[in-house]
Amino acid sequence: MNAETLQLEVIEALADAINRHDLDAIMQTLHEGHVFVDSLGNEVKGLEAVRNAWKHYLAMVPDYWLRIEHGVLAPQYIALFGKAGGTLAVGGKVKKENWWETTAAWRAVVVDGRVAKWEVYADNEPIRVLMRKKPAGRRKPASRTVKAAARRKK
Image (tube, rainbow, N blue to C red; front, side, top):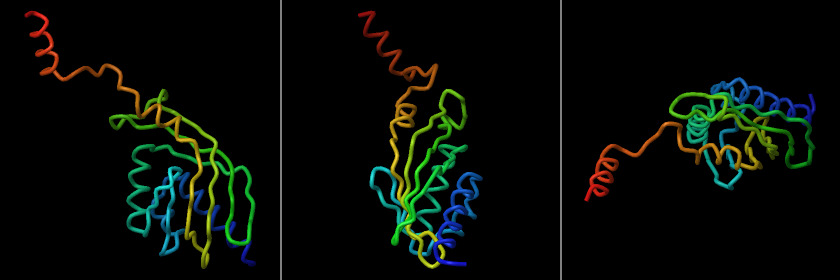
């Protein structure tokens, strides 16, 4: 097996593990010095921190998926292009109105048959809009409501 084939296979294994939400399988594809870079440029370094980040993200978006539509193999990295999406869990509940999708790109660096760096380039606005939304039926805490009513009576 040549180096290019190995790189593509490890990327396919990572994408498959992400789509299955299999945290252990995700971690098996990662290099011991792994660095994850999100679309805002924040870096998560080290396997324990990366595992924790994936655990929390998959809890926040329990049906997260990515679809790689095409890629470019460069000498030092692989550039991938496609879409990503899922449903934002609000209060532990997954509702169809909290579903989102966006175009995305990823840059992967493979070292010794494992992903040493995974960088995400995506427009986060679709999920940010959902995160800014107030849950339906949410009201001000009773203490504020009572105080506001008391002030209106004066």
